[in-house]
Image (cartoon, rainbow over all chains, first blue to last red):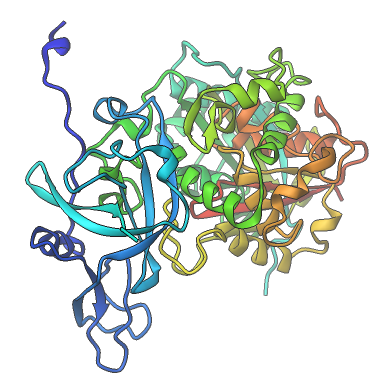
Length: 153
Length: 383
């Protein structure tokens, strides 16, 4: 079959939209930045990004740098059936990180052994709700994605 | 202000067989279910002047109307968010009929999810959620998205996999009484549940709904008209949709309280308009694409307090004779997964007294649509 010779599908890359594009641009420079209202009397962070501030309705926007520290709020271990590239890594982890700088803002990601390592590179028994993590960045298919490593205590 | 309360009724229900694979097309199955519902009501297809459906339905009202021989149609609507829209179809028809926009409404769902592709396999179609923030990291399927909330729920409130098993078991037990259910002859044990394969930890195979080909429909008319129909009317007592403030769909990770979802919003509106409360509900049909949606919905619709949804399932509470008999046809977990429409029809059967797992003397029923996405709900009752 022709399909059998087709190259394996890669892991998915983000389908970036206008609102989210600055996040990925900043990630490419190794910075974790979150969208915030740029109105001086408001300044509220918001996530995911959107055109205007749900608190004060200002369209003035900035991207505020985070320390990149957080805690695991929850996590899952997906098993097949999955897209082939993910099935090949399963069981892997997907985690939800609440940012220390902004606890109501949570980012989906993968806990990895080091920057650029795959999402199955940390033993499952090390995953724990509340575990402290730190952002790192790695390239995938021409775009830089945040990843998370356990913070050394 | 005009009220929907008991102004309309479900006068007919219809369904096709349910199976992993049916040979007929979705369109054919839709027509069969719609005609069966009209026959059940004793209303001629030419009298139909309103249609309501919900997204992920491939057959549109133009196709159904011309196939069944509907007359001039003066109201048609399509509700968003897949399984969250099931009950809203009846709500939209009830609103249209109560305000004189139409007189005979048909809602339906036809789906070949058993034979068809899994929706999450399409990586180019953007989901109605901000997929760029989730899918690259391997949070690919609805099961993964709900599993994330489930682990946090178990952690925060001390609920256990045994509580999720209680949900799966209640649905399976009812399916074992329902010859039309896909799991009619397939009992479930705790050992089977606890040793089954993982889908997305902490969710196992039996925490996930079935994959089904099938179709269902119901007919909504005014209360007055319903009293002249062939069957005992089942009144639409209250109806609500729910899209909470700062809600994010199945990846509801970005608000202050991700574990309170659309059920809470729909419930507030539903009960505000009703003459009775959660403790007066005789039987419930709660959307069960995944077992953890039941404890969350039990909390949202006010059957128990926050964090008590797991404990609520103990002691056979969801079984016949328990505090709240649940999904008495077997639900999406064990009868058929047709985006929750079978829950509507089962609610009607209960209030007619014709369910295969009848709750004795049931006069009130809650039916809910998908929790975890913008949702909807109905309170049905006999008069």
